[in-house]
Length: 345
Ligand SMILES: C[S@@+](CC[C@H](N)C(=O)[O-])C[C@H]1O[C@@H](n2cnc3c(N)ncnc32)[C@H](O)[C@@H]1O
Image 1 (cartoon, rainbow, N blue to C red):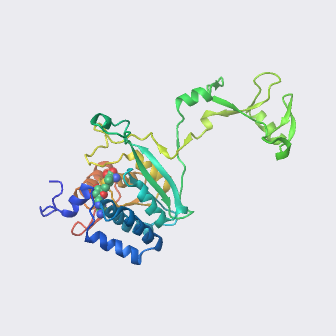
Image 2 (cartoon, protein in one colour):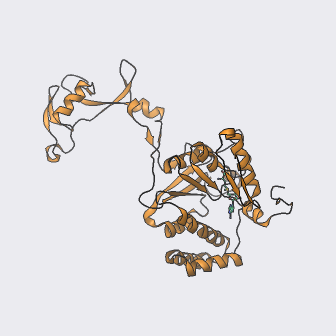
Image 3 (cartoon, rainbow, N blue to C red):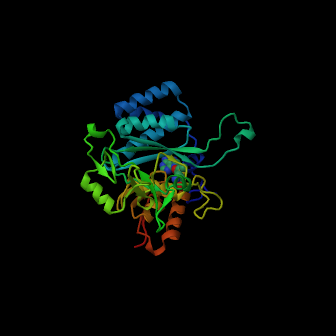
């Protein structure tokens, strides 16, 4: 029922897209030949090497399909833009080579590992491998000018308890840090006396006096080397790293749940979109499914384009947007459902 065309007949394209399987067909061979003959030389060389290793199998068909699309995505991406390719470990190692050939090794940024589940019990079914609980996001820029807004997450309580043990009378937590200049005189650090202790310091005498006036210098006992008071509430948090293990995936109790089989959590797309774009920028998801990237882009005041080959997905995206944003929804257009529709106008 899901895959019926508007007219009622079954759609081969939609079934194939949903099935998530690819087969080497005349079409794959044609796209492959086209890239080898007319595409960038490095990509052609790579695909030929891959064919000699993999043969004309399903994986190769998938890689050729992706290569053709990644070429176009590279073409339309702005110099300040980034691309995140979300996949699992089945093909991530091949896709990374394809991305290297299209986006350039120098534009590789991260291989982000997203922990999407806490445990898999395949072993009980006789699997002889560790549970596969992570996905991979291959992150590339278009150039050295890509937008990157670093994000921070709160410190773990165990880290706070261990490193920020000291508390001011007004309740502010702090830790003490070294004020001495590493490398001493050789590195040009000034030497003078502070609270009865002479050392090479990290700051000039004037700066040190200012820190003392501001109550930022502490001597834990008479004669001890003075140290710097670093307050917890002035620290930004932990900068996001390439391991994303703090973003739970959608489950049966999630408020976001729409029932779409491969639906991603909004938190994941939020991190991607906030890091790599600013308000008013364009977010493109060429395999948008039920529109997680589109909904998050709308919420974060980005412009957006979502593409999917199934009616089901497009209908869901439309419904999701109206449900989430109601009258605040920015007008958008639907192109290709047998016509060109405008909404909200
Ligand atoms: C993994 S899902 C995306 C899920 C999405 N991130 C979400 O949160 O809902 C991949 C989507 O790609 C679509 N798709 C497959 N082949 C496609 C093609 N050639 N062009 C456009 N969309 C395609 C499928 O219909 C499916 O909805």
